Image 1: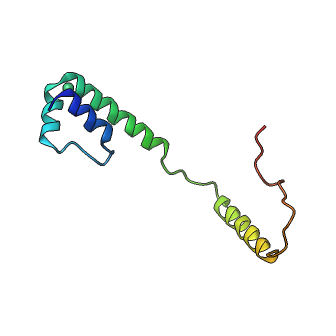
Image 2: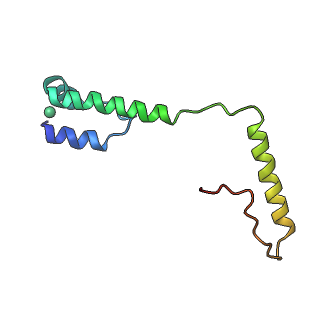
Image 3: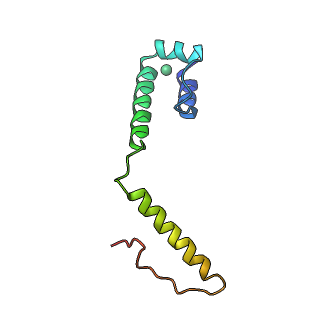
Length: 95
Ligand SMILES: [Zn+2]
């Protein structure tokens, strides 16, 4: 394996695709440049994963959202066949 093959592997891998391939491991252990790239890439992947980690919702927020969805759903069902004037008062507005 050379550096070019390693770069192709690095770009195509997913976070779950660990370097079990002995050729990859051998290249990382012998090439300082690719070893550094591999370390940086793992660090970036970890940062990306952390930024998408699950957050606890404030108490009652999930219930409030569900209630609003239910209300919107049922009020939409009642007006089937009769187009309703759109109301935008609850939509987020970019300022
Ligand atoms: Zn290399």
